[in-house]
Length: 323
Image 1 (spheres, rainbow, N blue to C red):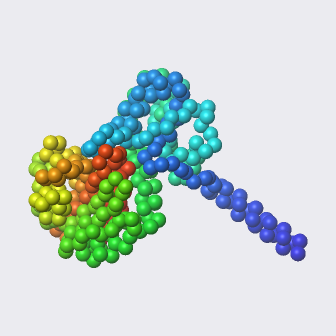
Image 2 (cartoon, helix red, strand yellow; image 1 turned 90 degrees about the vertical axis):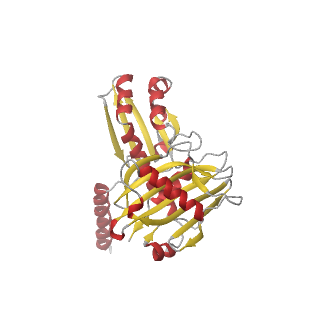
Image 3 (spheres, rainbow, N blue to C red; image 1 turned 45 degrees about the vertical axis):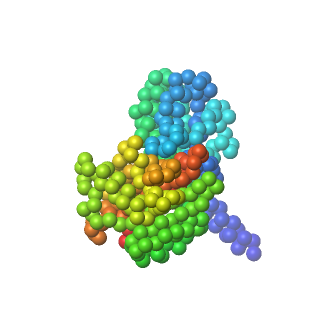
């Protein structure tokens, strides 16, 4: 009996040692979506370094109907950065005194986690690193937040079989949403929120509907305005969704589901009515089926912040799989 116990104990110790070599056991990360912990000395935070940090990671989100920062910031000096604080999902650390540089680390104190470390011997060197790598820093944190948002969405998924049958696409969206309208190859998906609604449109248009070049943005505006007129009525007779013509939408080229995609961000409006809000539109090139799959999210929530609403819609949209 003693021999059997000794063998069992040796096995447990052996496997535990191997496991500790291959994988660290660390706590789960935490934090609200799009919230960033900035670990920096108070004196730096109150000086030019703090200003540069805010200019980079708290810059206004493009194409919202009101100014909102890319990230909500919590600042903490290094001397109290310990315990629960280290479990934050997204952390920006400023280290003064070392060689100038920027590094991105994953799962340092918790999992999943992204930690960006900016170093420099002087305030000027630190500011230069922040400004030089600003886009890279934002992209790293946004990638982490997108993954977390999509994980939360997958907890309670709506059946997307109607989308797959009609359009040949799969999409992860929560049971809090409902399919409000289905018309052949057009879907209108809605979620009620305390201050209004969050909406998704999915449809297809022929590949020649959007021309490449200077006319791309005009074609996208014309496309979404025609869809709005047919499918998205306003509150009074003769009103329908259009693109706000006072501001030209932002247009980017990206990839979604591994396919070339036009990403458009702007403000929607309702013709003949006083309603508006932000939208994010993706026209995904699907050459195999000679079409663009167009998926758009928009928010109606007057007088409240909408950054996280739009980010949730972006997270849903980027889960799309075209068969």
